[in-house]
Image: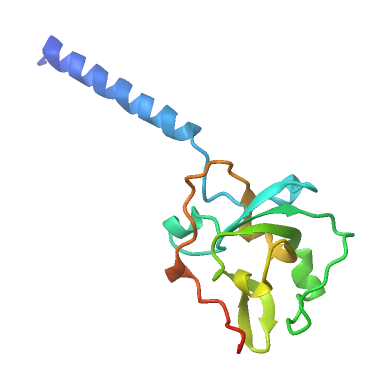
Length: 161
């Protein structure tokens, strides 16, 4: 048997330690693609609104910041918007949007005529809407979170529709 030299053993030990240090550092970082679980949703909880699908970069971004409202709060969509069905609302959470970062993000289950509706179509903040759980994650207070890229979403409707 050939025994590695002391230098090679030291190099292997340092390599193993560095790999463990990297693993532990990365495992402490938040999972930016994790979404809320219904059991963890609480009234007045701050949330980030995120795309429900897309590439890894898109999934780790945020499009808006809001707060979860209770189900008994009064809610009204603009008159020309269709409203989500009762079944769609059961799979969603009522959220007050307080800051829109990506106005072109499509809001599922709401239409204006036959057109998709985007966050920007709701006008000035704050506004309230039902969003699927797959579009919500715990609010991350860090300011360096990416904003949802425009190529993943469509432009908001202009006033002519």
